[in-house]
Length: 114
Length: 497
Image 1 (cartoon, each protein chain N blue to C red):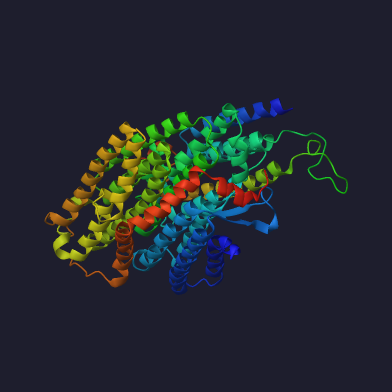
Image 2 (image 1 turned 45 degrees about the vertical axis):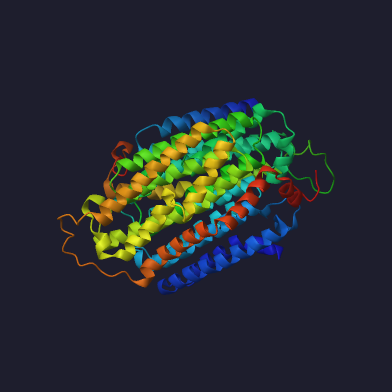
């Protein structure tokens, strides 16, 4: 199961990088979403998968290897919330930029650097 | 009082809440100035606390490390807290006169303190994931600040800044994941104990590479700096000065923290890489600064060039070199912010940042000339001011350790620094005012609140040079603490091994 998810992480990163290299700002943002989800999945996988058992067992004592590690799940939860906020801000920024300039082309963004 | 360790985070947070509740613009400036003044007092108190105890650790919520989040203040954190609070205070004063009308002071100070909170959190936290969260707090505030004026180029610069920094954050998070997978902990002190007896350098290096990329983007080192010159000159000068002094230095801080505390495998390779990156950063930034004729762009590239010196100290990796890197970071934060403040004044007097359209300021405003010459001399390394000692310590450490190439590069980059400072001096202050539409504009005398921030920072730069002996003592203490972190580990983990 872990190997399948590892491949999924790889595919998500590939898709993310491909979209980021397109010229459209919107595709860039979608690529960003893919990348951040790939990263979340990577963090989630970092503790290994323990299928069939919950993170916390009520009442009885359980050996550490038997139950799922709750920490990466907590980390991913935090990272998803942060990611959501960032995507919302990015979309708002893109909208504002489109309103002002009417362009979605990253190649047009050459005014501030030379 | 050990609970004071949490206050660098809680005070800005309380100020944000109060600004959000009382939505008054008039009050906002007062809250900003008094709030940041309070932070100076607090950070000085924390520094005294660190001097007494060595390392101070607070376990949040009573959860013992490594299970809970630990806040730790050691010499490095305390020094960074002091210097950053000394920077945000004058900028809060500067905002009185230089914030443009379209930006509401209330909203500005909300995100100003958001940035401060994220930065202070990054300085005091002892947990890697917590550090990630503080980084995000800082980044979100800076995203809002940079796009606050809603001009076309600000949004454009904002998109570039945001895109590259978000990619950096992803590297960071992926690194956190891998690090947890290898060690099963995210507490920095606990990581240090585990990774110091770990010989699986191959696995650790994967995580180290991801962190290197992440911090490299935040600190704007050589091949990863392109977001900085593309965005720093777009927002209002108050916001640019705030960014210039603080943002990249948090990246440098994390570099120093991570590579001294627990990324100690394969030292030869990483230190070599750090030195190569440092050399290219210095030269690339210095050359680009020499090519430009717009004050903010010159100074932005110049930030990059100076980052190289800090990374160089880390790459040499002796207590003296680390002390030099910290000294340099402190000096640079003060002097760099100050040059941006002066360029804002030039802009106010002449209505432009283009050096070609400015001239004759030395005659019209000797005060402004003096205010510029202090940080310019500090950056170029003229003896009585802070920069000389910063460079001297680094170069001495480089020669003692036999890193001759990087030392030569550092000395030569000093020439480039001097060149770009002389360029601003000659063009803006010495040459006669060129014939253009600004020529008829009568020069307005600087008001006290306008030049006070620059005067304040300049005075600290000079004092730091005069009392360099004591400041060097503190940074040396920090350097020794970082090279041998047993006290740090002991204080956080309380004997748990």
